[in-house]
Image 1 (cartoon, one colour):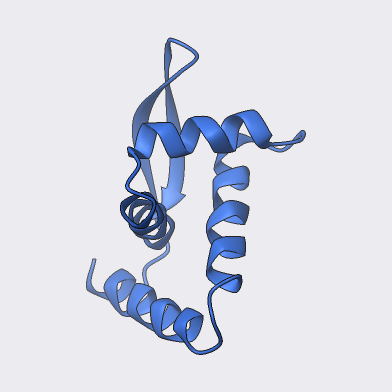
Image 2: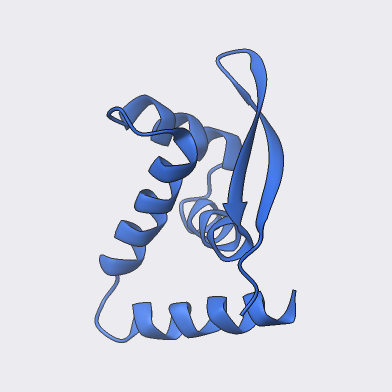
Length: 90
């Protein structure tokens, strides 16, 4: 399984910054944004505003993990397997 971080630029509080996450977390974040019919930047802003002390990358990972955990039993396992398979392909 490939676990290299992918750095992407985002605009946060009017400033351009970069966030490094594993590809599976970027995929999960995009999936959550699509489910909520929200822009990725809007979702990241909400995560940024709600975080408490940890860096933005860590806050995003926790958000994606908690979102996955909140899914009905079995759905999270399937999504995790799909994310792991996608990570192996990259």
